[in-house]
Image (cartoon, rainbow, N blue to C red; front, side, top):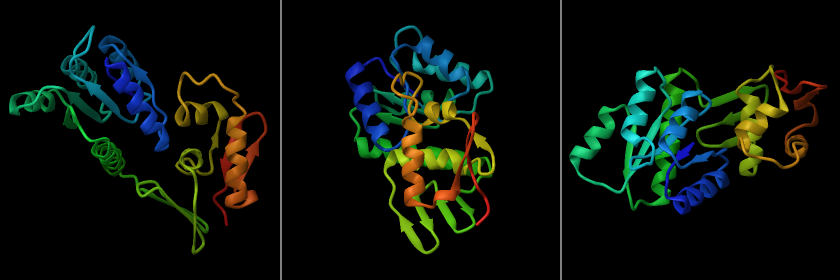
Length: 219
C-alpha cells in the first residue's frame, strides 16, 4: 500500500509497481492509511511523512504499538540525520528522501520483502516436482528449462506456489494480484491460469469447482 498525498507521485509509483507485478492500493490520508494497514492485509507499506489527518511518524508508531510488523518504507521531502533517526525510531524499516530514483525505490521494496520472507523462515525458492519458483529472483524453471512469464503471470503463480496443495480462491488471487478497487471482469484470473497451463503443464494447476485453484505438488 502507498500512503502519499501527492497524487501524481502516488499514481506514478502505483503504475510502476503494478508493472513489476505487485498489487498496489493507494490512499492519500494518514488516518485511512492507518486503518487499512491495521487490517493486516499488506506485505509492505510505502509511507509519506507529511500527510493530512495523521503524519507518517504517528501512523508508523501506532502500527508498531498495535503489534503490526508489516515492513514500512518511509518517504519524505525532508533530509537530515534527525529526521531519519526519528523515522527509524518510530519503527520504520527503511527511509528514502525525495527526490529519489524509482530504480532505487524498487530495489528497496524488493529487499524489504525478501528480508520479511527470510525473517519468517520462508525460503524464496519453492520446489514442487520439476517446477522451481524463485520468488526473490522472480524466475521459474520447469525441469532444466527456464520459463518466461509476464509480471502478472508470475504474480498469479506465486499466489498458488506459496500455498501449494491448498485451494486458492479466485477472489484471493484478484485481491493480491490486482487490488481492492479492481472492478473489471473477475474471469481475468481464468485467462492467466490458462496462460500458465500453456507455458508450464496442463495438469499442474487444477480447478476445484466452486472453490478456486490448486497447484498440484506431485510430479
